[in-house]
Length: 111
Length: 110
Image 1: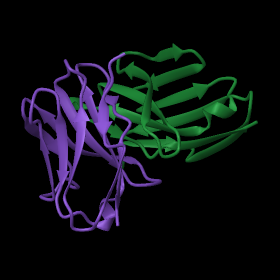
Image 2 (image 1 turned 60 degrees about the vertical axis):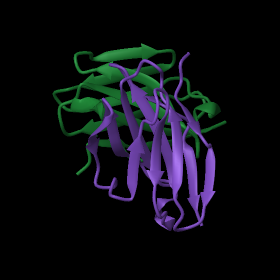
Image 3 (image 1 turned 45 degrees about the vertical axis):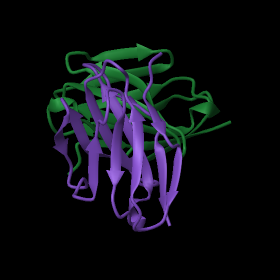
Image 4 (image 1 turned 45 degrees about the horizontal axis):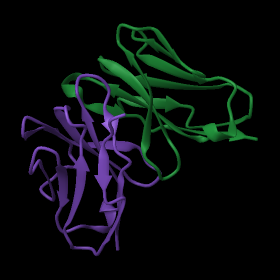
């Protein structure tokens, strides 16, 4: 069964550093998403991406964040100048025209 | 106000009992999905129900959708200790964006 894969599974970074979270969506999907889940809280929408551009973003997705589809298979989330409160699970998802398929997530710990 | 709200926030039952979780939402939807998440792990898609459907079954899972009341329920029958997890409803509105509720923490005691 096709799946969304995310790397790394766990990333530890120092406050102020930049991190790039990577995702390989399902190959024939057209819509891509990033979500965030702070420990013990709900899954929050960050951004959706379609046709090589952001289609929608939440209030959380400020100038600290950016997304990119650098090639035909990868979809990345870059977080600049990380803060302690950026510590969370970050989920990538993709969809064709049915349900969204989620990756297993990257646990980001900012120290 | 939230798009998806689960009720109850936490549920503790004995193995073998049925577990019912409810979800309410506020805006029109294209579909509603239920996900499961074990502590600190990824999201597992359980079932999707479209706005023109009223009920769906998958194994021990039964999902209902009442668009007039903007609510859905997830029933897990004959629960097992392995069903212990958080369960989220998620609604898809326009633009294929999925919005999650806060989740119900289910604890099944062996």
